Length: 198
Length: 336
Image (cartoon, rainbow over all chains, first blue to last red; front, top):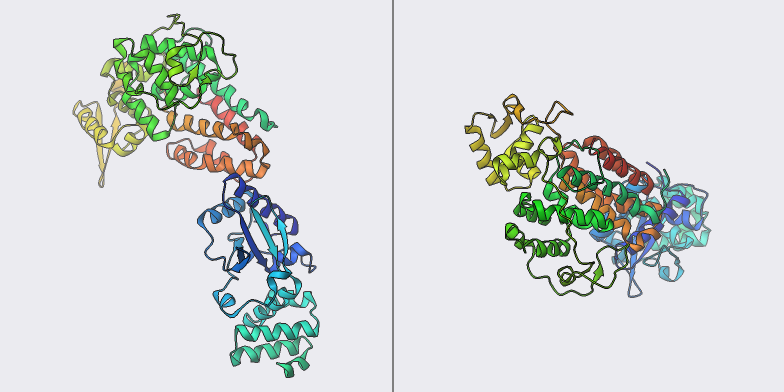
């Protein structure tokens, strides 16, 4: 089983786009975040990722939840998986938690997207570095660091970016427990002074 | 092996036409092939697949037609209709045109089931796509949407020879009639044992009628039944049936091959690679689409005993060239 490199990602999305055309499926415009987005835009030195995280889809120029993915798309993704020996569930919407849409994505995210066409019927828009910082900070606090924290460190956010991101994460989870962990993480990142501004 | 996409359909068609020539020659059509296929021919599946592929060899098509005029009574039209429906195998309009001709002869009235009035014909096409259409055309074929020269019956076809293993089903039909018991006995003699649902599925009949036939055959004392739990399995006492082996090339009963499934597989792959868009697909997409078409049929073929070939064909990362080369080899091996 292969991990996704920048090349494999391009091949997999290209093949998926080709399948949509060959099988006469409707056009799709997905918004992608996470490791595949970092790879596609070359934002970090990291060379592989496990999956393609679909954050949302654009319908009538509005960013909406991508869940659930239609059965025909899951079938097409699975055909690509088998052909290219990709990880199971390589294309998924796990990150697209309903809370994100209820509480609100970072303001202006849609305007900062970088779109790429994969054939005539598949458009993938990768989120910007700034929005990655927001989502990665939230994920790192929420899931105790790990690979999300590594990605955040690799993105090398400025203090201003981290402050904006930290304020946004509070809209997603206003609990005291989350705030405690957020403060600890900012301190760990060498930005303890930001805690006074939260 | 490297095969250009443009020649993909020919890469499949050529060995398939060779196989059809072998089978029709064994049944008694005039000329062409002297090699003798070993596996049992399924006459109804052969007519169905020939209605699709014999168009690409006008001589084969007309020799088949000639054979059907002389020997069409050996075809179980009811079974052929059932196979056609189950496998979506065969070209209904070509079968209709053939039937329209055959039913001119009162001996072939059963073919009327296939000669019901054609639906609205949107366009009339050449029956033989590689040949020009000259002045005169056959009116019956034209009514079914096909342009071809008037049919010239040479009358050179012979009845099937009973001394070949390939024509075993027709020998059994000569003994038992054109009902399911010919196929049932042929299937039992080619296998160790089987249960009614399996035999019905593989012979192209309904389970209920096969159950009745098996119970009747058991009463003859030449077929035995054993019960394993709730399942009743039937087996032929092969030593009782050795007198049927009037051929000399092999000491055993001929192989039963799931021809309707095999022919359907070849047709579906052919239809896919014949699509104009297919040539423009990437190698990965071609492989995906080939596997999508082949997987359900491959699974059924493995169920019916064609294991080794299809595990290779459905493996991951196979390219069009590899799959077509494997299919070519499979077709060539089928009659060995």
